[in-house]
Image (tube, rainbow, N blue to C red):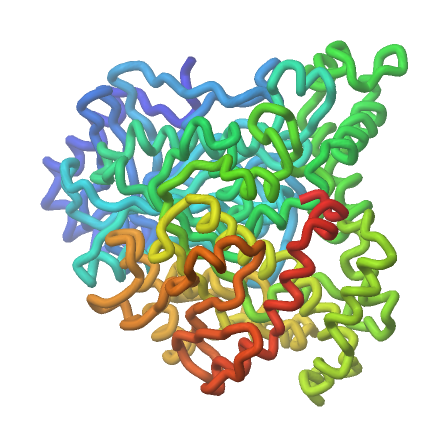
Length: 625
């Protein structure tokens, strides 16, 4: 099958010959290049990046996306065939390029079907949407040889399984890749697209019977298998792959670890999970998503004989117009779960890829083992899930009621007791506007339910049930943001260090848009954080050798067998990144008074009592995690 991003061999031959034999024209290009713009000029001044996979006889044509960058980009590389027609909802079918193929990898690929338009001031405007979206992008430093065997970082984007793309401007990897090369620790970067929303997570009896469920997760796995089989041609080491996920991207890493009850291992060797664990995936039982899938089928006119679970209904959905399905499913998702439609279509139990509730699989030790982990959360991860006018207990509980709709009255009462309003009165600031302590109470509750407690539960259960040695799990709390000016312009200064805040630090983004903070201190912290990440990618440890971190204790470094019998730890260590206390290690223990100001700040979060309840059997059952 001819791919839309293949160039004719004769055309690439012409391009290469032009670059070789018309070297004298470079000076002319320099004199006249301004009329075409800097990117055209830079492409005239240096050879086009080219990768040749000699084993498969495939040539990839790349580009430099910035006149100032030494980072080579290869974009819109398909790892699977277009998932349309009978392939819609089905597991991805790997691309088999014919020998001699020349792949034009100079332009970004399409985003998988989702709502279009603007999202946030510092993110991309969603425009180029297509079902033919199962592609990835590779970035690497200049002058990388095919036998370099560089460590590989693979990015799984967040977006609530409703939004996102490997081409999102917020995920620009040039800063991370460029700095790593400058530090003498070069890496290869990969970011992947996977099916979202209705197309990625629809479910029905017919889909379950066919094992055509959780397509988005199967896409991720197929992309990681492409990396395993192909990244060596780009100078990467297929045996040294670290997967990095943010938000549901991090949650999906946990689902990849528990996939097939752990029997098939994991197609990566290390993981960094930013603001996400298996507990982020609420309501794993498929009832809600099955109903939502049937409702879409009914609106499209695909329900036959009143049975929205039938093979006939499924076939009709596969033959339906992609734009019609996108518009109807996105509209329904956003109406039910405003503003972006999160939690309407998402991973569910299917008896195949996800064989039990993820928290149960973790407790049974049914997961891929031997994967060193860094896991994290952001100080105000829950801030944007709460309406600013929140002032009452009912409104606090209602801030997550759309997602956690099965909580018992006793559970809600316990949550309110664990988060007394007076704990949050000191957070109210004059510049926030008419914001009460109840807002910050709800924000902290949302943070812990969605992010912090699931991360802690995953890390503890992974250690307790034989995943890795205690030295191979590290935690951090990110406490800095470059979005403060943007949030101010948006009228939400109370978000502070909100969800997404860690991304430009991890990726060392230099020119963050939307009025964000690109000041020297913030760029220096970004460089330091990114160095820590690449140090882990390269060596398995975030410490030392110029990473900017000399002491980052393992999360449960001195935990013995008696403690491991418990369902939640009594002591934990983590790294606090940025904020008023700087970047520093912190250790807290149940019932012990903290000594440093940073430890006091973390201890104030009451992680032991709050997360013990949120991760308890009772609340996990009601949350469906």
